[in-house]
Structure formats: structure tokens, C-alpha cells
Length: 110
Ligand code: FES
Image (cartoon, rainbow, N blue to C red; front, side):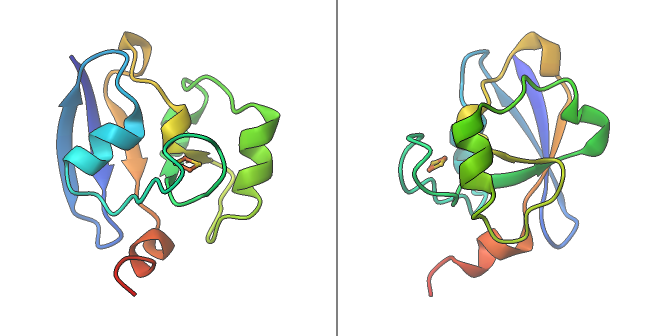
């Protein structure tokens, strides 16, 4: 299993574990993180935006151009922002720390 810690906008740490091959988006949703993932991984929305912990960013396989383009449209983007639907859990990122942007939460239920 691959371990991931989600950090909420309030600073709460949520430990999660997923099988290798699971998408980060699915794991986050399973843990109740406010990641809508509206387009289900088609890189046509940015509601699955997360911020990778800077210490971990280089260990995650890099974004393709389409992902970068979509991230440009996401609210609250940072240098280590990614689309969680494009990140697959692998042994190489066991221990990953992912921050949930406050903006994603604001989109919920409004
Ligand atoms: S779910 Fe739409 S871009 Fe990730």
C-alpha cells in the first residue's frame, strides 16, 4: 500500500493508504477530501487541484502540457500544484504529503 497524508485548508492531517495504481483523486475522495473531479480525469476541469508538498514535488512524475494548461485556470495555483486525477499512486511516492487548497473547498455546495 502507498501512504498519503492529506492536509486540509484548516491544517488537519488525514492519513490515507491506497493500492498502487489508484489515482490520488480517488483516494482523496474516499477520504472525504473536497475534490470534485468533475471531468473524471479528462483534464477538462481543475476541480481536482491539489498542492503537492514542496519536499515531494520532484518525486511525482511531471505534468504533461495539457495538465499545465488546465492548472493555469485553477484557483489558488502554486508552483507545486497538480491535478490529482493525473497522479497515480506508486511505491516511489509512498509517504506523499498533499495539501488541499482552500479554494477547492469553497466550490463545494455553493
Ligand atoms: S478531474 Fe478534471 S482535471 Fe482532474
